[in-house]
Image 1 (spheres, rainbow, N blue to C red):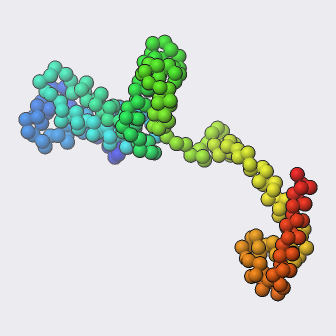
Image 2 (image 1 turned 135 degrees about the vertical axis):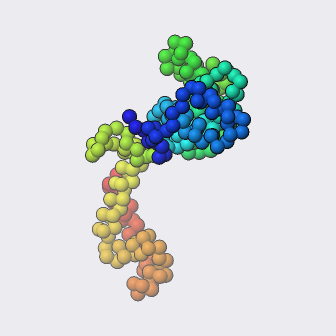
Length: 257
């Protein structure tokens, strides 16, 4: 199968035999920098293979591939040809480490290194506990394993977790899907809606002059003096109309509730 990431097709990558790879490594280390790009391309399959392990990551395969290539370049720079180790054996852990570090540090909010370290240790502790037979290790067990307070574990794991959009699908597909925002109920929502309906109906039921005063006073923010000038009446008349309208609306709410 042909894979293509960041414009690189696996079928077009150069292929080196073990002896060719070892010889090219020695030449690069001895100063033949012009062979560096060819060697990296020939080993790009190692990066593509590593990226496949992170299918569930929020980052795109292109991003992970680029980060993995940085790990590959670091591997080439640090590799010691005198050791009896194949380059691929040395490079894969470094590529994976570079990708994991990128994913950990790519949260939506900047998190301090000490907090990230606690979170990383917590994840490793959970894996260790579950490998020893504890099914789905809980936070108390993880905290005990690390010998730190539970609150510190919770805070660190929360800090590195990605926030979810309120408009993300919670369950269902297509027209039948439900978004997270639909599941979050404001306890005031129904009461506020009912009160707004009652207020609207109450204002509509007011005598015309009182309704004009209420609309201008409370919806348009006019002063009693401005209302008096507009409606061509005294400020005292406006005050009486406003007081009468407010009393009617209070009665409306008392009856409604």
